[in-house]
Image 1 (cartoon, rainbow, N blue to C red):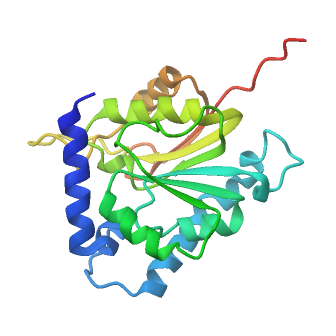
Image 2 (image 1 turned 120 degrees about the vertical axis):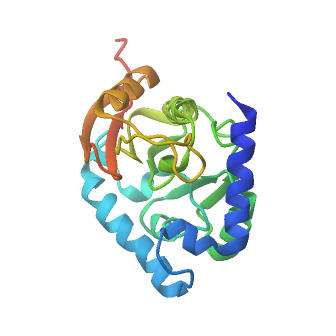
Amino acid sequence: MDKQVLMKMRQDWDERARENAGYYIRLTDQKTSDDREFYRSGEVNVANEIMPDMPSICAADRSRSPLDLAVLEIGCGVGRMTRMLARIFGHVTAVDVSKEMLVRAQVNLASLDNVTLVLGDGATLSSLADESHDFAFSFIVFQHIPSADVVASYCREVYRVLRPGSLFKLQVNGVIWERNESPDTWMGVSFSELDARRLCDESGFEWEASHGAGTQYFWLWFRKPKARDTN
């Protein structure tokens, strides 16, 4: 793994957090943001992108409630979606590469006792135990990563920390275009359907579904295989 790439990711997102965290997280045209509207947008994203998948998220054991589940959020920023996730699930592990983002998240999420904030290295989940989570989610994060190897590393790590049978729902950029400059920490790498299937296979997951190939919001559903019955 190129340490310079990971260092650049942290530096750039620290700088963006100091300048205007809400603007860079929501990708809005305005650099002013109302807190209530900011967190409401996170609630809407959770309602649109997670709640419809709840039967699939709980599929490993249909008797479980979401309140029984430990969830991993990759790229939590200042906690825009984390607040809502903490209302739905039993525990949320929220990871981000930016220390500056997490400083703000600590303040924003201080009243929640079921959230653990983790400063990641940008490519691994080394502080998290194997098979410790029941669902993993990432939105408008991987589209900013300038290296496909980093995205692949995250996927392998998510596979490691998920329990057998668990779902990983992630969004990547599916727009393939000719560009004059290399990917950076804003306009990151993109994935074709073939790239995404290869990413799934090489990470150990089973391909469950995809939606939005060729668009910015290319959604992927990866399933960690269930443990084999040895009896």
